[in-house]
Structures are given as structure tokens and as C-alpha cells.
Amino acid sequence: MLSYPFMQYAFIASFFISVLCGLMGVFVVARKTAFFTHTLSEISFSGASFGVFLGTSPILGMLIFTILSSFMVGSVGSRLSRRESSISVFSVFFIGLGVLFLALADGQSSYATNILFGSIVGISFSNIVVLVSLSIAILVITTLIYRKLKYNSFDSVGASFNSRSNTIVSIIFLVLLACTVSVTAQIVGSLLIFALLTIPASSAKYFAHTIAGMTLLSFTFSLIGTWVGLYLSYITNLPVSFFIAAIETLIYLIAVIWDKFFVN
Image (cartoon, rainbow, N blue to C red):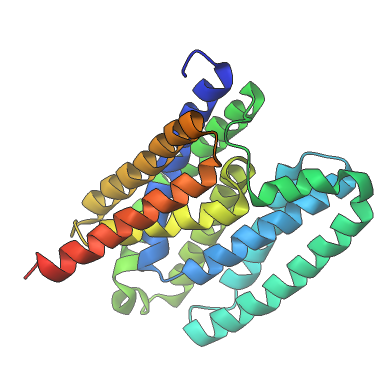
């Protein structure tokens, strides 16, 4: 299996995707931004349509759309009701634009449609370079703001006393999340990236009670899902997305059962 270059690229890409999803997913769950993450996955498709319409790389359109929407949502404040209403409005607006650009793209629209499902076994070396470069940039920025992000995410009461800093950190996190979705959605698909950003972290919280432990477990669960999914897809010739989604769901069910019956 590993004698094929495309499979080698797929395993390398899934490793970096698991690193990003393992780290960002913990904060997605802690900050209760799963709804926005799902919206970003939809907006990334719209951005890809925009990129195809312009005749440039779809990832450029994805970054523009997702980062712009992150700035908009982050600037409205941290109140849950206001934030969810804003997410709904921006989601409708950007998806509407995506449909428009998809219609105008004509013959190339099928390429943008592939963003919905990804092509993890059709990765090129250039895709790996882009993925690794952006992954390193995201990880470096996350490391620089890690302490403030941790405080802001896990101590909302204390963070509320510094609303200005809270807003800035929230915007930076949302932009990093947008970049994560954009750089990974073109490989695993905008529909699947939502699962990798939420399910492994949601499973990890049942086993670990520290941020470091949750992050490590979230990364491990993501890596198991992607690597085992790739192997099962190779030997069965069935879609890798199905296996990844099924494995992550199974891990979550095991985590829930563990918490319900084996944890006092």
C-alpha cells in the first residue's frame, strides 16, 4: 500500500490534519463553537466556488470567505444568542454567494463540488507543501496565544472581566479555526472536517481531565480514524470518508459508554 506515492501523501496529510484537529478541536468543544465550525465547513465550499469563478486556487477563495466570516462573527461579542444569530445570517449570505459563483463558474463547477467530499487519496506533493506550511503557521500562532486562549476558553467567568482582551482572543481563535477548516477541507472535504474538529475532542473529554491530556487523546482519535480509514478504504475500495466518520462515531460511543458505566 505504501509503495504508492498517493497513499504516502495521504498518510502524511492525515497526520498533520490530525495534529490541527486535535489541538483546535479541544478549544472548539470548550468554547461551544461547534455550530460555527459546521457553518465554516459550509462557507469553505462557497469560498471554493469563488476561487473557481476567479480562475485561481480554490483554497484562496476558502481562506477569504472563512476568515472574513470569522472577523464578522468575532466582532459581534461573546453573547451566545447574539453570536448564533450572527452566524446564521453570515452563513446564509456566504452560502448564497457560493451558489451564485458556482452557477457562474459553469463547466468547472464539478471541481468546487469535490470540496464537499474531499480527495484524501488524490493528494499531490504541492498539496502537502501547502498543508504543512499553513499547519506550521497555525500551530506557531496558537502556541503564542496559548495561555490567553486557554484562560479565555476554560475560565469564561474570569475572562469576562476583560472584555476587550476576550474579544481579541476570540477573533484570533476564529481566524485560526477558519484557516484550519480551509487548509484541511480541500483534502478531507468540508463535510468531514466538521466531524474531525468536534467528535475526537468530544470523545477525549470523557477520558482526560487536563487540557494536555484532552489534546493528546483528541489527536490520537483523529489519527486512528484517518489512518485506519485509509487502510480500510484501500483494501475495500470504498469511500475513505465513510470509514473515518464511522470510526470516529464508534470511538465517541465507546467514550459515552465508558463514562456512563465505568466512571463513578
